Amino acid sequence: MATWMAITIGVLAFAALGVVWAVVFKSERRQSAQQTTLLREGFGPEYAKAIGEQGRADAEGDLLGRQERADLFEVRTLSTTEVTRYIHKWTATQAQFVDDPGGALIAADHLVTEVIGARGYPIAEFEQGASALSVDHPRAVQDYRAAHEVVLRNQRNAAPTDDLRAAMVQFHAVFTELLDSSVVAPPVHAM
Image (cartoon, rainbow, N blue to C red; front, side):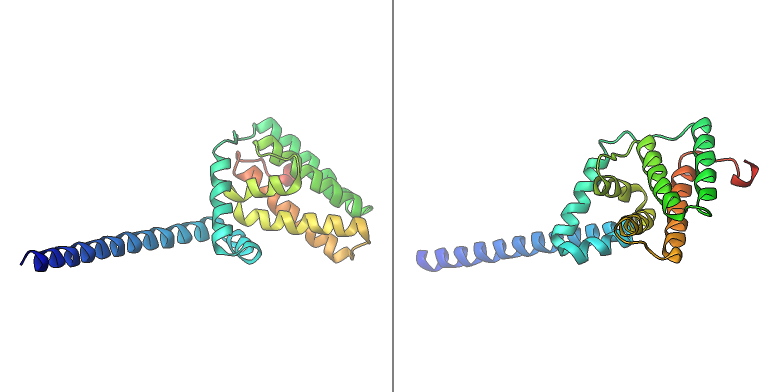
C-alpha cells in the first residue's frame, strides 16, 4: 500500500502544480491584456505605429520604456510671458508662409522643437523628442512626425505647396496643444 500512496501523492502533487501553473499563467495573461489595453488607450495611434514597426512584444516594451523615461523628465508649464512670446513667434512664422513657405515651415519646425524643449522634453535628436512627447501627447506626436517629414522631404526636393500648408497646420496643432496643456494662452487674434 505504500507504493499506491506514493503514486497517489505524486499524482496529486503534479495536479496541484498544474493548477498553480494554470492560475499563474491565466493571471499573467490577464495582466498582459490589461497592459496592452492601457498602452493602446494611452498611446493611441502611437501604439499602432509601434506595433507595425516592431511587433507587439517589442513595441510594448518600447512604450513601457518611454513611460519609465518620462518619469525622469522635468516637464513644466510655461509662464504667461513665455506663452505670449511663443504666440508672437508663431504669428510671425505663419505670416512668413505667404512669401516663403519652405522657410516658414523650417521656422515652424524649430519653434515647435523649442517649445518642446522649454516644456522639459529632450530635444537633442528628433526621434528622442518625439518619443518623449508621445507619452503625454500621443496624438500630437503624429502631427509632429508628419510635419517634420514634410520639412525633410522639402529640403531634399521641393514639396508641393499643399503639403507645406498641411504641415503648417500640423505644426500649429502641436504648438497649440503644447501651449494649451501648459497654461491658458491669450487668444492669437489679440496679438
